[in-house]
Length: 395
Image (cartoon, rainbow, N blue to C red; front, top):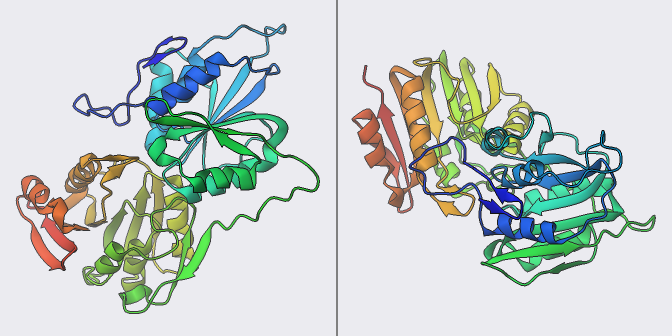
């Protein structure tokens, strides 16, 4: 990546030389050019918060750049903090900082579940796909913003809508946008801080009761933190999956892989109290939602909640059943790389005779991948839009 201060070597996580997707895009480059053109009046030790930095391109560029030092050479000019919902993004950031010679610990890495910094002098926002996540994070950061805080958002043109600008304006203050360059656009927001200005209440996490007719979770509560897929309703794919889950089989280790709000794993725990359920997702918001949903339902049995890359870290041959509704998007890119990684990890983690159950859109053709990996794929249920598939690990 070419920045105003030099070249950077950047990669996504996990690294794959065959992956055609870059760890940065035109929006990242546009924001960095803008910052280089501005002469920000920053105090020594000024606090820079970068929200939603997808693969660490922004904090790596800012930290690798060595600006003119303040009069007090012992005080850093900038203190960068990254806030992300993505475990994969955070791991990519660690690797990219090291790859470009940034000293360990010079960037503070926080998740969307961590307390925010008490003061923010520069707030840089990479607009997320989820408007709810943007709302939640701006509301959490707003008390740390002061009248002199520089607030700049950025995204591709297709990611920035009128509702995006209205959110900045409602929570922080007057907002305008730049001209588009290479299909990217900047957002400029002037914080409005006064005793009379009251922040809107934060509606997240969101609670609702599930509908009837979906098995063990019929009519039961769900807890969703902002940014989780279909946070305000039960998506039709999961609804279909809940109607066709495997029957209870007593003592067994079950994984809700890519757990989201934990509905599938919690349904298993309620139907089969002797099961031990592992909830795993790369989203910090999702795993927090899954744990809250599990507790809200008083589900019996043992449960573990883990943020990470699929089944990485789960011992080989230690799992009896994996339940999966794989995503087919990585931010704005359509890709089957995540599904393939999930299926491969499931085959490794399953015991001989163990089963992977997958729900997905019919047109995605997951049966082809399952047959390639497992040597078998059985159609459990299907309708015009979705299929539930089962693959068994042989030997």
